[in-house]
Image 1 (spheres, rainbow, N blue to C red):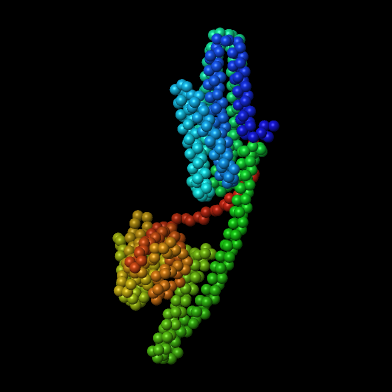
Image 2 (cartoon, one colour):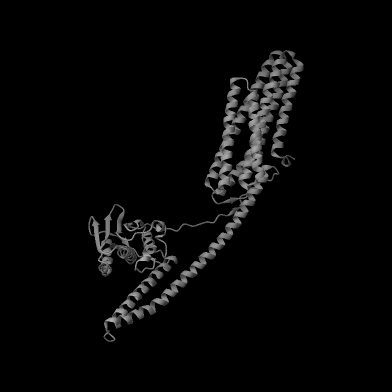
Length: 523
């Protein structure tokens, strides 16, 4: 039967019972002892209306909060209207309570009541505003938590103060009646016990019908915020039951959406795998004949097939240069596909990083001389800086950094390379004084196929894969790489490498699921 009633009807029913008992006690005492007419008149005209008004105000606040919760959960405009109406009624009740106040204690109680009511109203209004501005704003959840805290504080305050007022009234009546009529004493003792029982019942009722369901909803909401959806089992037809049904429906819909997204992600990963596989096969198929063509062209260029005139040698030299670029691009593509397929294996051994860098500088000497670029290497504290690296991979990373610095430097410029031994590893940088990277493109520097818009204006070839490879290689060495750049001023790439690598583990991702096996008993 109680489950069929609305929450407000249940609370109103309890208030009616309490009011009936108190009024019955007053009527009995009045007919028995006329000398206490003034005292009981004061109770009738002041104390009881104060309690009733307080209870009504509490009801309005609770209904308003439920409307706010429903509005945040469903966006129902009727709920928003209900919350505003109930808060208006609560403010009217608060004004009535102020008019009923007589003593300093009453005014202090009314002032505390007013402060808490305004705090709840302000938090609820801010929550609605945040939700209407952006339902997905993390501040909505924070403000909802704040509103729950204010609500709990408000309930605790009311419970304490109302109980204290009722106890005071009962004590005063008992004292007066004990001095006059023993019969009234017994009667009031009985009424007092009954009131206590009703209060206990009311507390249990509030716990089972409000506190416990709200706790279940709060727990579900907290899990919801962590990406785990717990089905709420509240078999009721009041406002909380409706809210629970709405919450379950929302959770089920979100889970369905996540399942669909997971399927799409799986399809996307499969397409990406097929693309990487295609690139790998295509690059392998291209590299073998391209290497043969370059070898044959090199023999012709060297005169092994007969002497060439200057024009022939010039054109063949251009062809050899383009073939070298093509082979480099193919090698970059193969490296990228190995990274994507997690087949870019590393073999860490002790090597002198200074020697590795010098080897790459020597390899790029011709390129530097063509543009009259000076490459300067400084080391601190010595030329022997040994650490665990994969020499082939780290050589590739250093080559790409130095190659880029030379290519994108202004003619007659200088490239600065610095290596320094620190307590935990190596700190270094490669700096050029050239084209720089436009600020709007700097977030894309370490992505595949990145080339700056200003770079495309100069005669410089490149695959756009070099810095992507550099970042992956340094990260796989447990290092880090950053950069600072200003257009037409230059770029500095700063990197760190540890002396030894830590054991790397891959985190396991668990997709959110709708939990049904841990459902609570019906509330």
